[in-house]
Structure formats: C-alpha cells, structure tokens
Amino acid sequence: MTGAERKAIYEAVEGRYSDPTYSNEASILTREVIKLSEKWLKQSKITPKISRREARKDLKIYVMDNINLNDYKKSYFLPSFIWVFIATQIISYIIKMIIERHTRAV
Image (cartoon, rainbow, N blue to C red; front, side, top):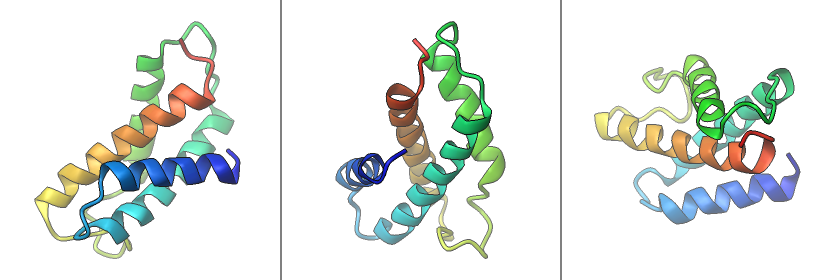
C-alpha cells in the first residue's frame, strides 16, 4: 500500500468514527490493522476465485488473532467494553476497504 492509500484509510476511519473519546486509540489501532493487513496481503494467495466475503473473513481472523484489544500494555487499549465494540467495528471497516481496493477477490 502506498502512503496515499494508507492516508485515505486513516481519513475514512476518522470521518466515520470521529468520537474524540477514542480518537487517539482509533488512530493507533488503524495503523496496527493496516500493518497486519499488509503482512497478510503479502503472504496470502488471493485469487479471483475467492469471494470478497471469504477474503474479509480470512483477513479478520488473521487480524483478530494478532491483536489483543484487552492487552493493557498496548497503546490502543482502553478499559471499556464499549471500546472493544467500537474497535471491532473499526477493524471490520478497515478490512472491508482493504479487501475491496487491494485484492482481486470478487
């Protein structure tokens, strides 16, 4: 992904999830999800035969296996069940954007 593509994702997330209570953590989480997604894209074998839905599911499993929203040592951690819900929504939104823009899945 190019810098402009990463910036577009950041701006889309900030526009959609603009609550100032979580803005810093959402930004850090966005960077982490993009980093993991880029790693997944490099190692995955997405073909046109795979649907976007399947690709999104695979990427979400990979991201959720590598991110712990309850790890208090992470800079994106907030001690709130509401944050976990919002963070999950942010992750799903980023994954949808990445799969649609950066894979050949149909």
